[in-house]
Length: 112
Ligand code: AMP
Ligand code: ZN
Image (cartoon, rainbow, N blue to C red; front, side):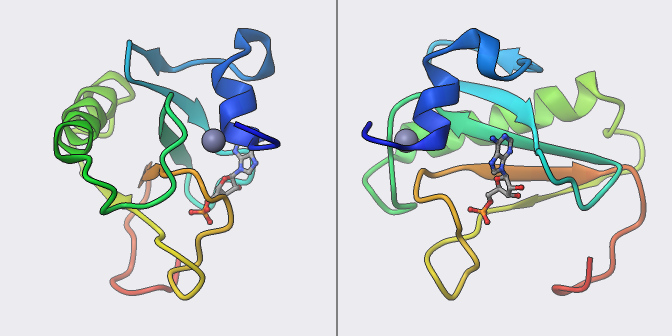
């Protein structure tokens, strides 16, 4: 959709290596990781908002997150899943995505 970077990456395999891909979403490495493992789970469809009537998709993304956590070795020590929603939530790309972060112990709160 338009000039959305995640739509662009989603429609062109050469733009970023996929850690995982299915009919509904794909997973790539965050370009600016804040933890040793920092992945983005991105719906292929351009969905802007968390509450955009996406029950099935949101459930699917969480199931994929747990699969990918296992695949990348995060399962043993745990991980964090974050959704930044809107301006105050720190969302910079208005295309729904989950951050999957781990590889070191993370403090509670916003201090990464
Ligand atoms: P958010 O602040 O939740 O909207 O997160 C956007 C995330 O996308 C940030 O962590 C960025 O580092 C990441 N990002 C931006 N552009 C790219 C890109 N081209 N490939 C991978 N990650 C990106
Ligand atoms: Zn998009």
